[in-house]
Image (cartoon, rainbow, N blue to C red; front, side):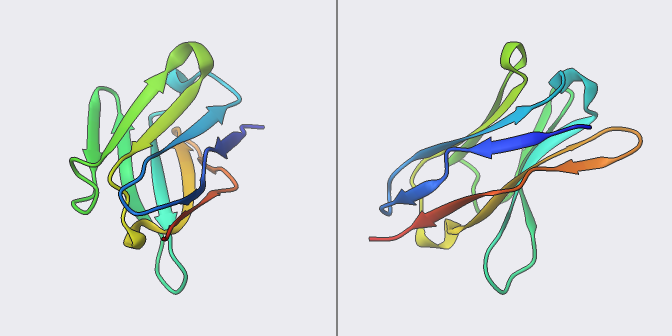
Length: 114
C-alpha cells in the first residue's frame, strides 16, 4: 500500500517561511505526477504546486513565493514556502498519482498568523 506522509507544518508569522516534506513509501519516479494541494475551512481543495516529469506548475497565488523540489534518494517531495501570508493558512496535502490510482497523505496544517 502506497503511503505519503507529510510533515513540516506549523504556526508562522506573516512573512515567515516553512518547508513541507512528503515522504513516499516507494520511489517518486514510480508516480506519473506529484503535488501539493491545500484546503482552507469552507473552501474547496486547490492545487498549490505540481510536478510531472520535468515540468512544474504553480498556482498564481503562490508563484515566486513557493518552490517545489524533490530528493529521489529520500523518496521525498518538498514545498519551500516563503513570504507566507495569512491567506496561505490551510491544511496542506501531498498527492501522488500513477496509471491506476491517486494517493493522498493525511495533511499537515499551516497557520500564518501574528
